[in-house]
Image (tube, rainbow, N blue to C red; front, side):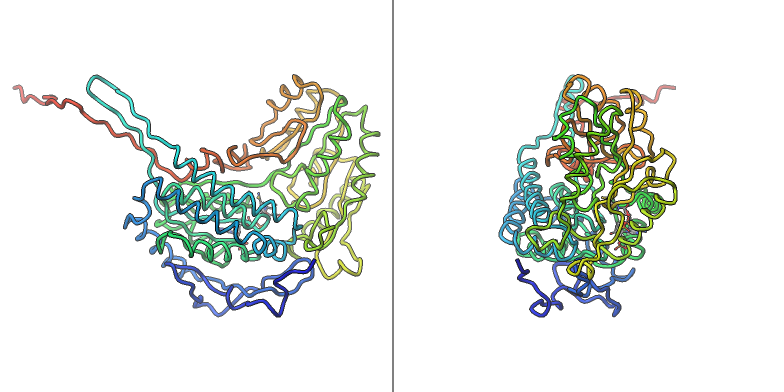
Length: 504
Ligand code: TAP
């Protein structure tokens, strides 16, 4: 299969702009960033680097639009209508968005198509949630009626990473718009393509001008300015724990609300009574889907000692068959690493693992085959004989690298699973339902699975414990991140209180 958008036929200038106040405009900064296809290093576009002044002006526009009420005061039904228009627009451009995601991020067609489908379902979900949301009212005291209402917060700054460019954008845009906020999206500098296409779709809907802005630029300028600005009321960020910490500090100025979905080093526990074929299948999916560049990747495999040998044999046998290749090849099962910088960081970790004394039993290298060497491809990589103090066991590698540890008893598995600063995800495989549930309840993580990995839905809250973040995306919890809660107390039969009687 070939892309429809191959170099030469690509209208690159179309992608050189920012979307501010309903207009596509050039940045005043002449400096641009090459947007690269990581499967072959071709330049597919040049993206602008918006300036601090442009970011501040955009925040000001978003604030004015919010205060004008053109969107914030629309009824939930009217807002739902626009969300459905966006969903329909995504559906109409599903193939184009899929191809753009493959070309820019390096993931496979199957993965990208799933992301785009999830994105349109997210808009549909929030449209239906809006239509079903009702305010709470109760009689607090005799003749005192209380209403609890939800209101938009104001300007929402949405900062997204490169691993799920369209999906992470939509997980933030859909609830933020549903709640009635004005928004500013800042995609990762290296993966702006689907965000640009998404804004072209948004432009065609009835969303009023100035409600949704798109700023392309660096995290240190655009992202930092959004995080610091007194004009921004809520910042929602997905990315590394280090940048999450910086955002929280920057947000302290006006005490803006922060929602942070950060990294992980998630345990996947395989008990000796698990269905081994099932566990092998999901354990591979858990780490090698998205080439391991997934926040919830099952990067620590904990296998009960007495099945270790048989598990490893089946695991390696199947891991060796994974077809690594360019995302636009329908036979590819694992795509490219997003950038040369990130590939080198993963390769450095593999080197660290060897130096720390871990045993490399699969992969470990950049792929040098003729059709792959122009891109950033790394072999599925497996380390055993690791100890809990090794960096490859403690730090998020964010690549196709798994470390395997063994355990004796249930308590050892729980101890190993929780021996991490992170708390994003975790899984248990066992045919003993009671044991599986007992153990998963003790895993300190926000997203967990029993006898599967990575399966989830738009209704379910997504987020982590410990240094994996604050707040939740998706479901009704995701909407809460972008809403204020107000109480209104209404006297039904008002009488004077006469608290102050002026007695001498
Ligand atoms: P980050 O540096 O965290 O970048 C994520 C987003 O934050 C990007 O849009 C980035 O912008 C922006 N950003 C960077 N510095 C910022 C700042 N000071 N203020 C506000 N925004 C800022 O992630 P990365 O460099 O892409 O990857 C580094 C590591 O982060 C990875 O190896 C991985 O461990 C982790 N990571 C985790 C996730 C998830 S989903 N948990 C996703 C991606 C990466 P620019 O990139 O445009 O500068």
